[in-house]
Image (cartoon, rainbow, N blue to C red; front, top):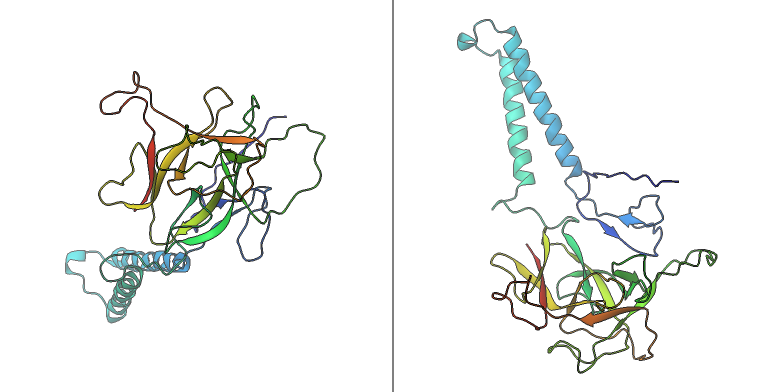
Length: 291
């Protein structure tokens, strides 16, 4: 049978995060699907509704006056009408002040911001909240089909029921394939070691951008971390690019060649890729920026 879907717009939330292999937790807001999502509510929800109602009340009062008016140029508001208009003006003025603090900058005290994965690290940058830490997972490098994206799997999974009949194993740990000969210049040799990750919540920003081919952000943007683009090997199944931290670390001390999903350093190839400005056969840097 075909699979339906729906595109949903949650107007009362500002941050979205899908956590693989993690079900309901009482302290989070969730939806009823297998892949649970939660979002942080902002403190502005009720205030926005109140402001909307105040606008409606103000417009209603104005229309009432206009309907009763035959020659509005010479119409004088009654004391009760003027009192209502003044009250609405005062309410709107004070509500806007509360919503827009001095300087025009939105408050950062509420649960707003952006989330991102810091690939290759167990923690988040200083001053950034860590939602959870875990290990990178994905599809086996030898599988010809299935998922291609990288997942940050939490270290405290809530495992499902036995499911072996389908013969469709697609979730494996991810290993570095960064030997001393085939690694970016700024990354240490961690070949055959598993890759950690951390999901970070940057409360003070509202826009997130990963820039490939650069190690610094453009003017007006703040760097969360920088590193190198890693992906699967070109001779195996496809794997999504990941911006792996330049100070990447292993998940643990194990070095067994267990394969699974694999991270290789990639390089450029001139031709369809215009050189200049790019150069041929060089490592590809990246930076994660917020604003």
